[in-house]
Image 1 (cartoon, rainbow, N blue to C red):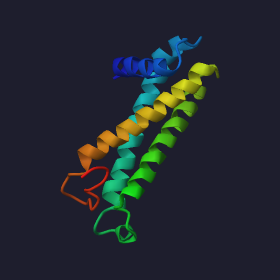
Image 2 (cartoon, rainbow, N blue to C red; image 1 turned 90 degrees about the horizontal axis):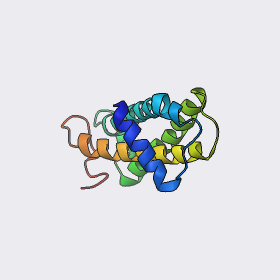
Image 3 (cartoon, one colour; image 1 turned 45 degrees about the horizontal axis):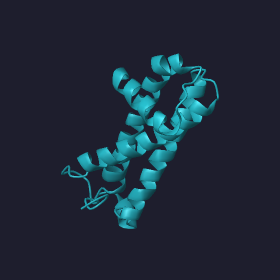
Image 4 (tube, rainbow, N blue to C red; image 1 turned 90 degrees about the vertical axis):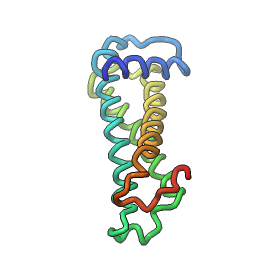
Length: 139
């Protein structure tokens, strides 16, 4: 996984910012892998919460109408926001210098978190147990 994240994050950051950080070695050794793994788990957890807890036919939250596309969009935006928070927290805890590269890395991880959430939504919404929200994000 580390080689995947070491390929993915510099690619996305390079769309917005061309210079490498002074701490780029630390990013490749520690930060990309940690942030990528936490973001992957976070997106998976939010998809499971949305499809199998909020939209379970046996749980009373489903009676509140959590199977609407608007609610999926809110959870998707929450995943993106939490992805930004994870990128910031893990990077600063690892000792990364607060420079422009960190800001664009946070933007990149926001996009990655949203993408993971979308992919997990497409994969897990059709499972037979618990989901009443089969029409979101797409039919």
